[in-house]
Amino acid sequence: MPENVFPFDLNPDSETATDQLHIRIAYELGALTDFSVQYETIIGGTIFVVVRYDASHAEAHRHLFDRHGATCDRKPYPNSTFDQILDHAMRDLKTNWRRYRTDFIWREGVEL
Amino acid sequence: MSQPLTKNRAHSGDTYSPESVARIERNIEGAFDFLRSVVADPTIIDRIPPGARIVLSPDDAPDVAAANRRAGIAAQQAGQSVYVHRIRRARVKSTEPARGRQRIVSSHAEGRLAGLLRWGRHQAITVGAGRRGRTQA
Image (cartoon, rainbow over all chains, first blue to last red; front, side):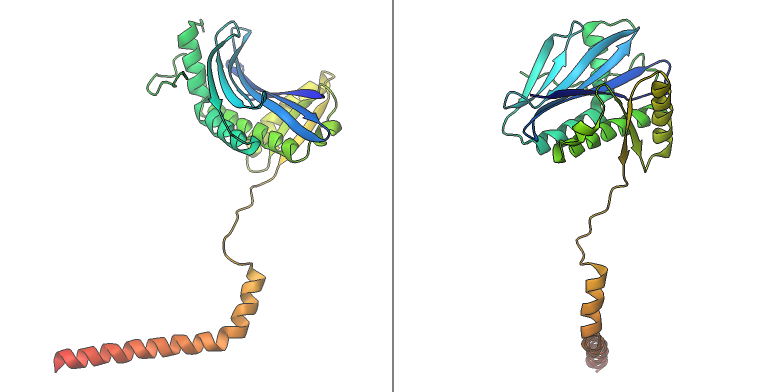
């Protein structure tokens, strides 16, 4: 199954705060089979994965990560279509990326 | 159990300017626009060179597009492949009928419509006059 990962630098002109989005897409026979969208922040030169929306494994879900990259919270979105999870993930990340980042820093005690 | 996001915690340690926040939010939207395009047509992936950097170029945010292009040019100069994803202005969907169709309908019924309007105004004036007349009487 072909799988592609696309990184997006969200704040390319910034020198102090760096954030990126990784989109992973898998497709088979010309049709999308699963995808994930991952928000990452770079603090002190280290890349931390903060949150990921995952539409694989037949069920969409959202992961929150700890500083070591392990899942510390998993929220399922049962019976969601690709379109629905795309809409939800976009609204959520666009509105809450900063809050996810702040929560991550507080929760994990990351030194800025 | 899903962990709720905090509501009142200050964004401590943030060094984001309002411009940066706007740029990040626009780029999140743009990345999803790219993903939506791929969902609609997965063959787009075949046209992107492996390991290419995706440069988002939103028509409605020229400053964001310019910043992304600058980063794209720098990546290209460093030897990386670049793929520009243009995001066109969103078309506003209207529930009204198409203008051309509206014209055909109005030209056909124009005379009748104008007549009804005249009749309506006439009736209103007549009724008003009648009521006034009755009140005064």
